[in-house]
Length: 53
Image (cartoon, rainbow, N blue to C red; front, side, top):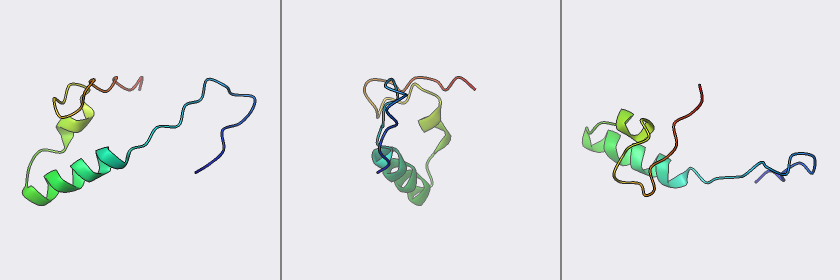
């Protein structure tokens, strides 16, 4: 892990391990991976917020 900078207290570190694991699983099974990134995938609770870009 990378330590968070002291001058950026609102920075939050989030694990993406579950997301990567699900993407690998779906890819292996021939399922859609893109739905993981649309912010409304039911496999994740609560839904992931949409990225600002």
